[in-house]
Length: 346
Ligand SMILES: *[C@@H]1O[C@H](CO)[C@@H](O)[C@H](O)[C@H]1NC(C)=O
Ligand SMILES: *[C@@H]1O[C@H](CO)[C@@H](O)[C@H](O)[C@H]1NC(C)=O
Ligand SMILES: *[C@@H]1O[C@H](CO)[C@@H](O)[C@H](O)[C@H]1NC(C)=O
Ligand SMILES: [Cu+2]
Image (cartoon, rainbow, N blue to C red):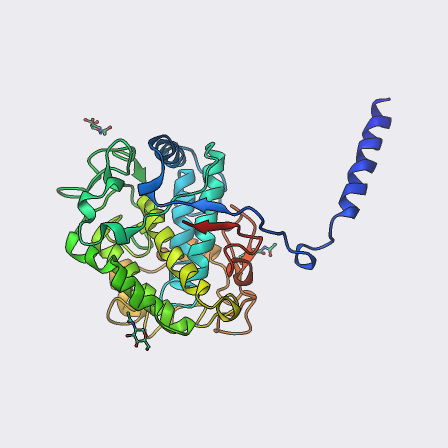
């Protein structure tokens, strides 16, 4: 009896399986009811607390992959992805698609900690020039305030006294969650700066406008995790800022969907002569600041040209989270309502 019913189940399962399309790309998943990503200003205190608690849970849960160098917590694994991919996803065409995918990785990890809502973002235009007085830094319903003294550890809030083990640069040194707010820089996340970035008509120019404009100045205003470009995602606030960055790209795409939902360009890896565009010198000079990825990191670093035919980024490029969620192509993330992704910013 037992075996018979198992067999019946198996057959029923197989019938369902054959009824489904063979390959997802044959019939893409439809996005009929997009999740709404709201600005931190507009969500309830209850939702804020649930979001913060799930982030805190990841910072205090053990790592799972047994793969990523230096990772002790589940959060470290998320930060490690950014460290491993750092030279592929900044000052390259991959910047916008990879960080969009990275937000999805965060969302999936938050589900492990019981968070079921859409992830919020931070509409920084509303706080431009006065970041330090934003509700986002509330010690109870926000991310805690600006750090002080040596180390700039956040002094209060859900992330005070928590440790991140990835970074700075390509190293692995336990540090407190830290940031330091500078209001002056934050002025350049204002609407006129956003508009200047989004006014460009091709991907490369819009990408640079976003990257070197509100994205970079927001980072300078927050100086998260020692202001370190390679591991700033150690501060959970990073993802609120990058939701804002992702929204800028989505808004730019929405102005000419016909063209911009498939428009991609740039390199899939930093030009060694340029490195990070915000710092002088190329990759080699910048390694004095950040160090260089060691053998352990290089051993798990994906081929930057995976899916591409050379150094130029294409829609076929494969992005990886090294097993946290399945790989995705750049094509998969071009449309936030394309099926693989299904959300909108409101
Ligand atoms: C952080 O740890 C210190 C020392 O253990 C303690 O005095 C302080 O209350 C803690 N802060 C928070 C916000 O938990
Ligand atoms: C946007 O671009 C147009 C055409 O190049 C230009 O005339 C206009 O001043 C730009 N607006 C902003 C806000 O930069
Ligand atoms: C996902 O990407 C990683 C890194 O490039 C690669 O090693 C792995 O084979 C990929 N997995 C699949 C199923 O393509
Ligand atoms: Cu980044």
